[in-house]
Length: 127
Image (tube, rainbow, N blue to C red; front, top):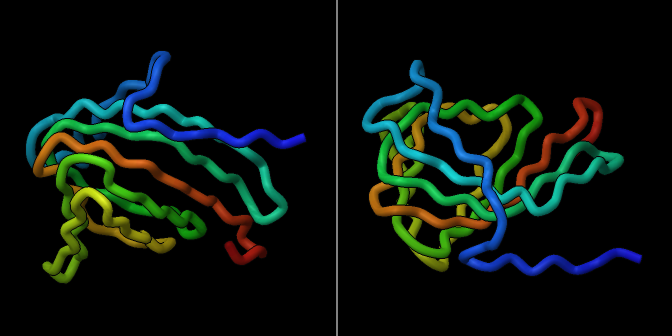
């Protein structure tokens, strides 16, 4: 039987802690914490979801050719910049879908907490 998993804005347990890779940094060197609550192999690909927090900073991002992400901001403020110079600003209660192959920059303006769902689709399967 499958179980339901509730995501809280603050979780117990130890997160995975990291920083953006040095070659991707634009500003700062923010600490990021990830609580990956679900990691599942699906017929269409791999699925991950959980909670992520980050300090202010900015770095370049590049989604894989089959990687989809949907996130919702719980607290804080961020921007996702596209390569043409425009951006989307996301605040609490708002979400953003990032499509496969997207390249741009992720900027955390205020300490951020978000929930996320990432699907890495198999090349021959739609997500």
